[in-house]
Image 1 (tube, rainbow, N blue to C red):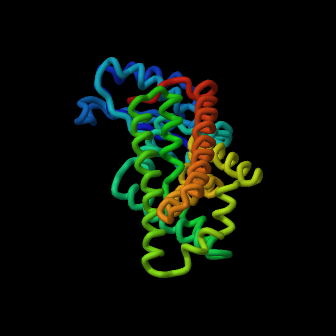
Image 2 (image 1 turned 60 degrees about the vertical axis):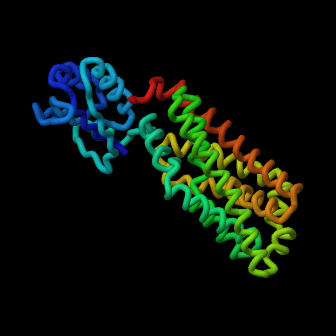
Length: 308
């Protein structure tokens, strides 16, 4: 993916910014529309650049910021053709900027009606899976991890810590607390509903093979979870947020949270504790992976603070 920037900037600062942008080799095209911006009042600068130049462009914009209010829009370009830069375009990178990461996590880990609904629905599907067997269980567990946005709030915590951004950190804490409490509560509610319906599904839950593995995970299961945690953090830094369902399937955050609530509702405190311990292990894996991956990117690729 390549980059397009639209910058609304006061006229007095536009010329200086244009001079800086012209010095960036990976800027492919550059144009200015004088007096085109109404809010903020001033000029509009449009930039097409290679993805690897995104940080350089944003640094130049940040330096222009003290000279007046500005507004910046960044978008991904599906196709970029330029005969003079064909080799550079073909070898462009896939790195996200901090602005990409924070925006993506804001969309997926914001406590809204949609977020709450998806967490509850994912937990209900996972709870039903833990009372099922064979193909139905496998499909339902995958579906639950696709439905519930359980990875993004934890990644937001790691990003907030690495960037030392209080707002991102606090919103991540809020989304994590609300989201995982909902998963546990929805699991408990599902168990109570199954008991009230008079089915034998709750009895199947206690002897379910998946439940037993969540309570006492194998080394292979933990390795899979660890790889999922690292893969998820890498995906956030590589424009692949849409694929985060894969890492969440590898982890056991959604079924383990639902299992905790189900066991609590059914009066099995020891099983609930084992489920909570599994949630804690996977949460720890995601946080450590996020700190390591985001920290490494901060040291090697993105050594600046995001634009606020």
